[in-house]
Image 1 (cartoon, rainbow, N blue to C red):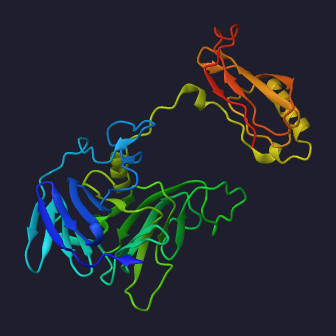
Image 2: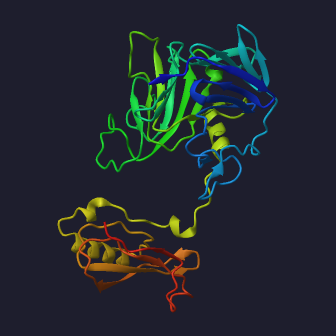
Length: 370
């Protein structure tokens, strides 16, 4: 595992700072808003994926994503870069970043309500940024202070306060998980909120803009050769980190929403009832139970807009017709067709009332086999 230790050269200006490291790697520091700092560690050919689907302050990214280096959605206040023999720093907005050499380490401070600088994040002085060529992972180590409280990371088991645990950033179908210890679960978010009991007004958040499998260690690991630390490790070459701070009138979660953007309005067909219980899928008489369920829905006039993949429906593919009445969905009707499929996922077509006679689907999930 390679540690980024020596800074070969430094340059900076109103747009931020660039640190040239060994083997063509570089680190870029940019203060994009008064409340937002971006730190990018990248190889000579740039980050593996140059698009983002996570950081989209203004418009939804769409299927193609947003170019990471399109900064038009940020105000980009002037950055002040100071470089001397003994000290290098970048100041802008509410941030001050002190850059240390050999090994490379950052110390991040923010202005509190009394206009005083408070140190909120510090890289581990004995090594903080690493690239592991063998395992193709990039790591970032920071000091873990005694008064810090850690929150975030998405859907995780156990207490909301994450200290002294290690979490995988991945998604699996964790049916029947242990609510105290299981990991990972259904949804992970590479977002960590750091709250200090000593400086409650200086909350900060770290958002690692990556969709790669990763690990957040919030103090589970301990080494006799280092001060107390926590780390983030991602299976990708390079890291893109956003550091957020709160404002006087908005909380840290509100600033995260401001950075990532609001979720897009979903289509109407996705707002209905999707029956996704595994009870029918695992039922010993799955086909009979499935038909019984449909009959119950018909009896009580319950509309359904989606059905699960059932493993126990032999020799049938189901064509499901959903009819819209004004703004409400009608009940479903079903027609069995003979098929040579032993297992499969049904084809689902949604029709409007006017299109039903010609059978023109508005949405279709193709029939497929495992």
